[in-house]
Length: 507
Image (cartoon, rainbow, N blue to C red; front, side):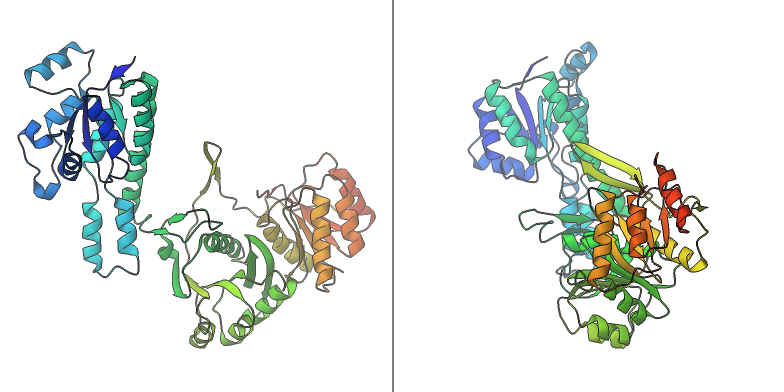
């Protein structure tokens, strides 16, 4: 049912873009009620506005904490037009009908970002006091009331709604349809939900940070990060962390977390893919082997280690250009050496538990899935012989790497060192060709190496090509209708093949 807007309650923090809307309401003869700064804004435009305190007979009190929390305001919003008792009570108590509510929310996230920044000069207590005062009470209450009564009331809960409403008022001569009011209400509830979530996370310590980033993946994209970054990391040196840095940092710590039982491990990440990873008895040994796997791709990468960075390792790392180095600690000498170049980002990773679910925005919604925590579900020796103890160590190592590469993915490992990888390919054989080419490019011998695949081999061509290159053992989830072909080739050629039952697609 269409409803004509004859009265409006307007109380907003952000005034940008409001003028054309209030001028249109005034042109339509709409009675406007307002408070504080919004009232002054409307009056300065030379438009008629009724102060809310004239309606309630109460001034703004408690430092502005109480302005609109009054039955004459909420009765006007919540009163049902087709409900006889509601109408009788509204008439009895002099409650005005309010057809439109335009209210936004105090800038809680923006204030939190401000007091969390290095430029904030106040104390922690002063910062928290500023944040607490930006917890809106009346705003969410009025928005929820108007949205609840969408059958009669139109609600606009952010400046993003000004232009759409102005167009509707112009095109429909001051009327809104039921479906339009329902859509405005849905948007309003989403805004309040997000606002309350940020506040809840602030109090629980889960969302105590908000930072605006220089830009997103590309300079023309704006971006921000919401989350308790400082709970996991201490930035010891370097420039401001970018969007792409954060994405690679996430990939790096996700990867290194899967090597908790693999001794000393060093890894190099580039565009979220692993381009070098190795395990050794020493940190410098792990670094040298990780770099040797693909020294070309390491340029400008994100480095991560699960042990303290010592001076010997720092000296080697200092020879290349990198964006970020992550480690649980740094020796005093190593830190001094690495801080010689001002833009290097050095992060001390204090640890943390990743969420049990992953979220990804897609189309007009969101995908939610459990985080991939498995390496393998079973260990089925299906080839021509069992894997040797050395091969088994390498197969476990390679399977973790394949899990962290974009699909289709192949990882080639020898002596717990990544010597070739193929990722993001449209066919598995192309991923293997890329991996072999990488190994050959840096003179790595594939004789006795192992191969991991993130998904099953659809044909026996990968096994044949791998064997021809020198690979002696394979690990894959299995599940192809032609598994028997790959198994038969391994049996005929005395090769080890392990079936895990666990696929690791990563898109």
